[in-house]
Length: 355
Image 1 (cartoon, helix red, strand yellow):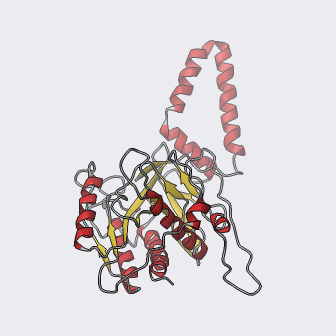
Image 2: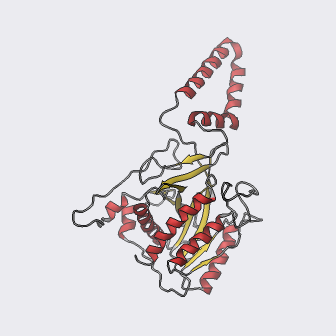
């Protein structure tokens, strides 16, 4: 899924770039007053439209090479930056006080809500505390019949090549070679779930190639067929790789470090009926995801970006327990994505097993 993001701006380190811009502005002002107003305006227009100039200016300010992926990281222990803000600010951090008699205190819904953030892009009012006070708990009911279905609506989404996973992207970090696409991440999640006694169906079909348009229709047909063949399925996971780009096309990677290992951040995307398509149980899906987000935030702070509530339904009307997970972005490597999905898979396994 493609998303546009304005460059992350550090709080310090802007003095030199600001000075350069100030000198340039003064020069243009003097030239304009000397009779070259139209020419000066033309120069400013050309600079404003130059992706290269903007990209190098941003790289200069951040102290990064112009071709290096920028890192999209949280500033606090358990929050991620708001991805749509012009000048991102960190989400709040909440660390509960431990009870003197219990090392695992039970928090009220209001307390738990302080650990979860929902970026709401819909017209609906959403209250995290209300979601947590009406939890949707889904438990694995069989060790023999499939409990989880994993699909990839955009199965050709891939990651930044590195020494561990070298490949040549077809275009925009995409490939139909499932060894290097998000399908490989689905393989890893399948192994984690099954290792924890949760039978899992993994649909490894590519729905967005050779034609991208209609990929959600094709993946929905596969989901419906799987649910009909296996009514035991409790959870449907559509696994994606995000794409966060600056206006100049530079890729961000979503990054966190847990137990000394740098890895991709993950994000839940929850669909609604706000776009006009029928989706009667979207609030149940939201409540389920918010509960998972709380468990993940508590177990692995910084792993999860805020929940993203959207107007589209993303095939999540197929059944309650449908979730879309963005695993990193196009600036991440496969190794970083695999490290993240292993932690996610363990928490999901524990939740489904009622641990």
